[in-house]
Length: 225
Ligand code: C5P
Image (tube, rainbow, N blue to C red):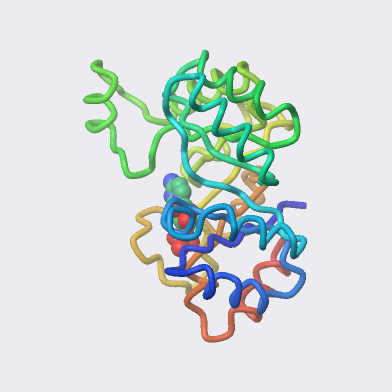
């Protein structure tokens, strides 16, 4: 069964913990840059002490030794999953995977969904006829380096699952139930389509964090899984 991950994109740790307490049998949360920079390891420790698995989404991209040290620190802190950028290259990804030591699941960001082909062409300095192909190419590099999986949008999900086989984790953000507001997400995917496409983890933020009854919305997402 796919896992539901609640993105705690809230302004303070107090609000994040209050929300977590309202979600029945909460298993996974995602801490992103905004809240982690504000609240740091104390919030991560508090969430894990409550039995919640933390996905630390800081999207590391640096020299191999620095990324490896950050991964080691996240592992020691008790994070269950974390992100690195596949564009950091094989040496960085391998160093990160070694530091994760099989205790922390590392997933690679392939092509940022905020990038279109023209943006990506500027980054890599060559023509890019197909962004899905680039996502698949980078995903293969990440898995070869020993990562547990990748982050993918609904757009390339089915293609990646087909190309990578059944084992790797595929984490999918921008999940919306029919009728949910997209917010600033240009391309959303329903939970049903994400699961059908082979997602292992569905990341949902605002449909739950902004709801009047977050517990009820969380429960309905869980039922669709
Ligand atoms: O509120 P919403 O459900 O749109 O939140 C989605 C979460 O997934 C946010 O925390 C965002 O940082 C993250 N994310 C995303 N799109 C990506 C990668 C990550 O929205 N391509």
